[in-house]
Image 1 (cartoon, rainbow, N blue to C red):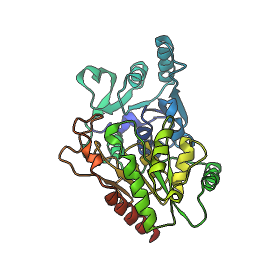
Image 2: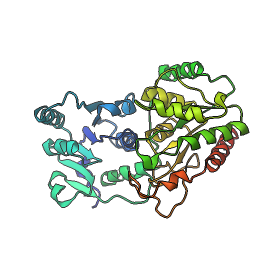
Image 3: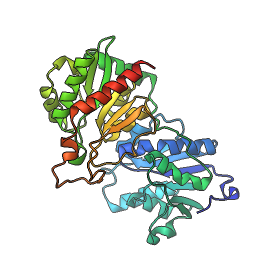
Image 4: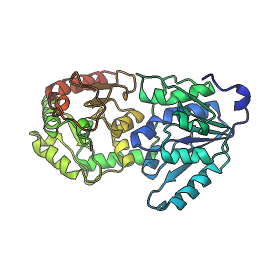
Length: 352
């Protein structure tokens, strides 16, 4: 579809961006939010998302208001509909739907905005939107998402995900790391060794062996495993498998999302599975190395500071959550190979 005419874009003063889960996907929408604010600097920019995603958007200077879905409060269909109508009733001049999920569709349905844009919907949803377009394949996910904005004459030019931390949060991260055992002169590597999907979970024994190899090569490295609710046992298993115990530092408690991001900002490298923390690290400027199983390569920001590593099995990427083949794409990806790439990235970082 051709870009929307300039006449229709004149006078836009209020914009709604629809982007729910997951946490990483919300971060990947921030380049588009930044581009929208540059294009319409005087406009209010609202974001419709989920309560758990608020930490990824808090403090973002481009956002005027966050409309967060609280599933505990919206515990009936009537309450849900009332909330969607309230959001839609704000009088938006432009609505951008990045997902076409059911809750997003309700807001689009109730909105009277003359401009409601999205990626090409199935035929039975097209009545909801004024404009849509096909998205490019085989490109960075944030670039692909921002591709919808081409309808507005806006082009992605390499904008990164953004997570805005306060000075107080950054200072608090320093205290957390010191309490965890990071000493002056030691280099921090944050780890994301957990995942709820088995097809994206590199084995704990491989993470442990990678830590030992890296520590033996560079004894100034310290590894901080990050984790979410209910994942404490997985971290205990990992630490128990590490031979060089001093290589691992542990926070005295589970860190919140923004606390974890503030620690990542101080890291020389972030290594982990394909999950939200890799996007958080990118958003705060930390280099990343991601171990891939079922997912494809297009979640990496296109830069030598952000790399992935995978076995190269014929079935990769399958993008599946289950596997009947024994997940050999992850089981057979040796820690020696990942450690070598991590050490290479660390050396490059120290030389810049």
